[in-house]
Image 1 (tube, rainbow, N blue to C red):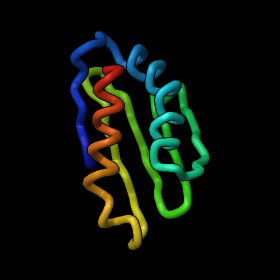
Image 2: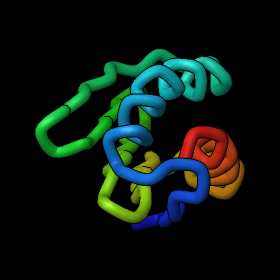
Image 3: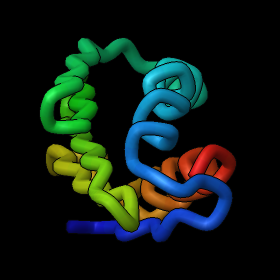
Amino acid sequence: MDLKIPYSNITDKKQGFDAAKKLIPEVIAKFGVKADTKIDDSQSLIEAKGSGFTAHIKFTETEAQVKVDLNFLLKPLRGKILETIEKQIKKVV
């Protein structure tokens, strides 16, 4: 995992997962890229796949876990991308 974001504003993973489902398209739009988003309610997992990247956000009982895979050209932006994702998820969890 690249990031582990503990819950501070919510009490369970369902609340965070439901809020994040609405938030993820906004986060992707901030980067100006197109991505296919898959939502797996049974696993509380959100996956976004676009040109050169894949992001996985899994909601556990106590935290949101983020993993981001970037292609070679996007690797220099890794810190900024993770920072933006963390900031946005913290708003809802």
